[in-house]
Length: 60
Image (cartoon, rainbow, N blue to C red; front, side, top):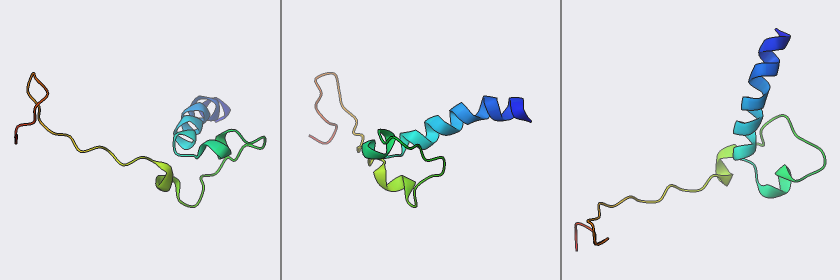
């Protein structure tokens, strides 16, 4: 069980840190549980458009 926790904890920490604001990451006291809204800090994915070799979109 201890070996499993030692193997899984770094992955858990990376995923948890990916959704934290910078001020929480750089704080002196680490938090092991996610904040109430971990998805609010993630960026919105950009809208993808098809473009040709010149960079012009298909609609132009």
